[in-house]
Length: 230
Image (tube, rainbow, N blue to C red; front, side, top):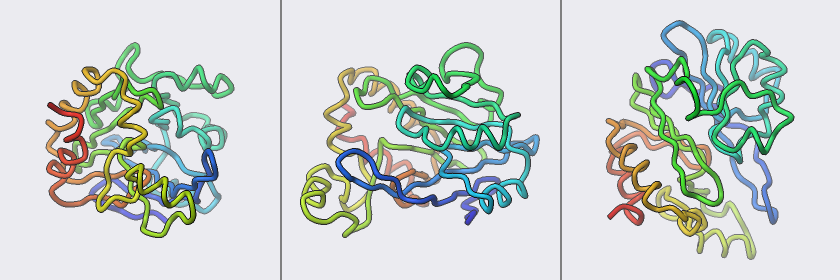
């Protein structure tokens, strides 16, 4: 269930979810162990008893992040099982989910306690969602939620397969879907954020809806965002 991809970082594949118009997506979360032994949960998937037991063996869960306004469905279950954990929301998510007791919105107020180990950039200017992209310094891993995607060949059928192809969701390598490209209404803000991401010494890229990239990560990220950068 837990797959270690580098020192102190693991990934978990969760159940598929169904979004608008019946499009279904694979899900993936990450668990990062910080220097003090506590755990940071990125984009949590559905929580089962087995998953909770596996996570608990790694250390105490103290930080849980919903990295954009689309990845929030499993947050209440995690908050219930780990009530002592600090809940972090991407910009605009707390207003969307007033039923969830978020402790901090990323980008406002004091930087989170984990910011020296996990850098973050807020990619603004997109009408679909504002995403917090992370960089785990120790492993050199960039964590991207929805901005870069790639579904397996044959994942969709019928008219959905045609839409997915046009949207670049089944391109030859993970990339930014066309709907997200078109939704960037403030491209200067997006370019500024992406420029910072491209400066990270990335060694791997972990995505919620695409296979991990474990080599030539910086070149991969540059290709994914070439359409946006001048």
